[in-house]
Image (cartoon, rainbow, N blue to C red):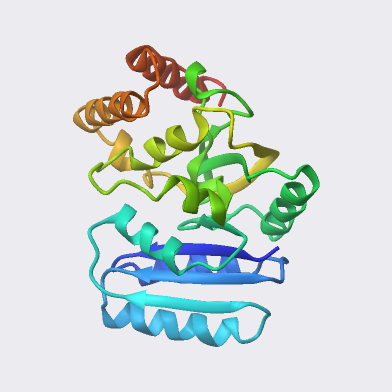
Length: 249
């Protein structure tokens, strides 16, 4: 199973190199690594050259694009459009260990599902901050997979489309509601930490009271636009489940 991993970057060559090191250390051999650079600065160009050289030392392929984009989700859509893998996902932080992609491929093939997700830890350097443990569930009960751990078969994007660019915060949630609110898409679940995410990496949705309010409104809209009943109640349920992650810390 060929896996495409997409990294979006913007004037952050240091983080790009850290993320790339995590991706290239994966034991899964059939790897396609894609970098979407929206900044086009000299430091990032040098980082991409380093990644190209390291990629030649292992199996797999590397592709990149450097051009202005319209934000995170536009960049992600570009990466998906470039991807040729059987399984596609993003990585802008780091994998928890070197076997994540290999385990993803194995469970999707074994269970014949449409994709896979798992657990996530938020970290600040080496300090643990909080965790994301949702397991399996239903959108109507406030469940939501950890988006950075979500890898899907290419045909899911072909069938359901890409991420909406008119949403500033909750486009990832809207996309997951779109594909998971029914019973057509089946996901495997790996009950272990797959990704270490830098604390603050989700600050667009949790950084302030205003951003939380905007995120809540977009989440309600995401549910309503996809015909899910009781969108405000479901968003409240999801908020409670997220807050419980802090309690269980």
